[in-house]
Amino acid sequence: MTALAIDVEGLTKRFSGRTVVDNVSLKVPEGEVWGFLGPNGSGKTTTIRMLCGLLKPDGGSGTCLGLDIVSEAEAIKRQVGYMTQRFSFYEDLTVKENLDFVARLYALPDRRKQVEVTMERVGLAPRRNQLAGSLSGGWKQRLALAACMMHTPKLLLLDEPTAGVDPQARREFWEQIHALARDGVTVLVSTHYMDEAERCDRIAYIAYGKLLAIGTVEEVVAGARLSTWIATGPGRNDVALRLAGVPGIATAVFGPSLHVSSTDAEALRRAIEPYRNDPRLTWREAQPSLEDVFIHLIESATAARGKAA
Image 1 (cartoon, rainbow, N blue to C red):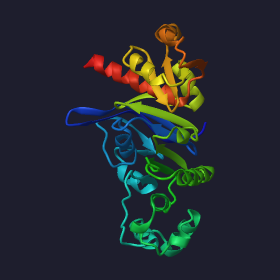
Image 2 (cartoon, rainbow, N blue to C red; image 1 turned 45 degrees about the horizontal axis):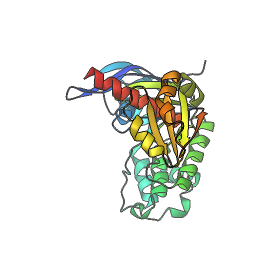
Image 3 (cartoon, helix red, strand yellow; image 1 turned 90 degrees about the horizontal axis):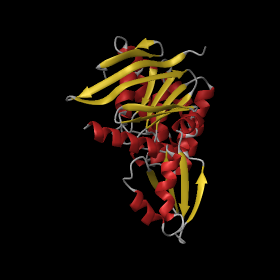
């Protein structure tokens, strides 16, 4: 069997009595790229910080790179690469100076050579003397990635690394990620983008601190057991308003189309029946998309949370 880079059970974290990560378990094989998805405030960042040794869990146990996440947290910090949501380097230093600083922190041997090799690897060499503060979002992202991989970690934990960067920069970033994976690096990356989720070997979806789905994209979509209908036409927004709040029915407008989904195919048909003859709309049954599944998961989780309250 493939060894596990991440092997944790029942991770739980509370702040001021509020549970923000609730019994999360992950088993990530070495060399795979995993997407970690969920809405803002779902517990993704807190989970990642527990995995890399920055936060002590209030419950649960496990290992990262074979190291205990509680008793060997300091060793984990030195052996993983963690990329935070926000750019956290010195904007008044050049690219090269920032990487040299990181190399000093890790006490890397032959650090000047290591800095040059890292810049070449991620395409930063032509910008070595540019101030970090003057870089675009995409180039800042490359600098942050370069810094967290300088010490050649076998596990990268990337927290929404492509937020706010342009599509071309996102594509180039993912090319770098898959190149690292081919070299045996394991990657756990949180993201809001569906196209990025589909680039991952497996995905894990979390909401309100609870892990709701895990597996390949195909497994997650199939496991949701959703039926989906799509309505196209100028009346879509009216139907979306009328169906909003109907128990068990999830709706989302994507440009000219309205997606309506449910795990109960018959209930779904009854819900949309009054609008099937609207001349402004064209209806068709469709395979649910990953985004349809995520909308269903978060709406179901929100409804369950409301009932529990």
